[in-house]
Amino acid sequence: MSNAVEVLKNTLDAEGHAQNPMRPHVAERHEQELRRLSTIANAPPYVHANRGAAMKRYQDLKKVIEEQLPRAVKDPDQVARLADDVLENTIKPVMLTRAEMRRNPPGAVDRNIKGEASPVIKNAILQWKRAMLSLNWDNKTERDLVNLDKHRREGMSPETASHMVNAQIPGNFAFGATAKANWPAAMPEQGTVNSPLVQAQKRERKKREFTPEQRAEIGRRLVESRKNRQEAPPTAS
Picture 1 (tube, helix red, strand yellow):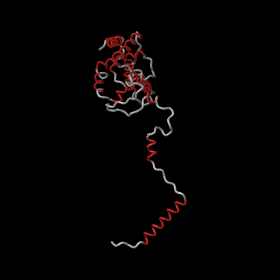
Picture 2: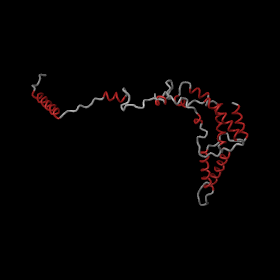
Picture 3: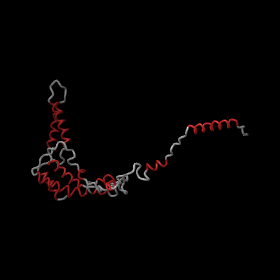
């Protein structure tokens, strides 16, 4: 465990912060459940309801909220500085890039096991999340506050396509930003000289159109040919 992770953990533990603080959307659901249980527990006598069970559940759930709900830290500047140190110097250096997560090149699984999935880094991630939730204890809307994927590097230059030949999911070949920027602006309507569209047009045979005279001549020949077949003597079998 790095020094920053240990100091951050000790600081949060000393102030009694939850080991796994409750997320805003979870707290909202619990608050709704508390209101529902309160309605049952305080229902009029003529309403058939298990008031005792509702009250017990209400007290248990309220205790969970009080213990796990994020609280403000005493020294926000120190905690923010430690959290940033843990993220930049402990967590991010071992995180796989987005391209590696998508493509799974050789060695990516082992690196993930030794990195993000290792007990040491998992603990660092937990302490960072505890700090961020405590620093933003009044957050009610941002669900991705402690989503590490926001801090994951892309892994590929924006000027190249994310194509990995040796990966499990190599991806399809595509033009990158550089190729698109240098593509001719005055492109002819049919595309390049040997584009798939032009090749299809070359293979396609145009339907032959006949004049009325030609159609009449073709019809006359068909009638004459049919008549000759009918008048021909039968052949010996």
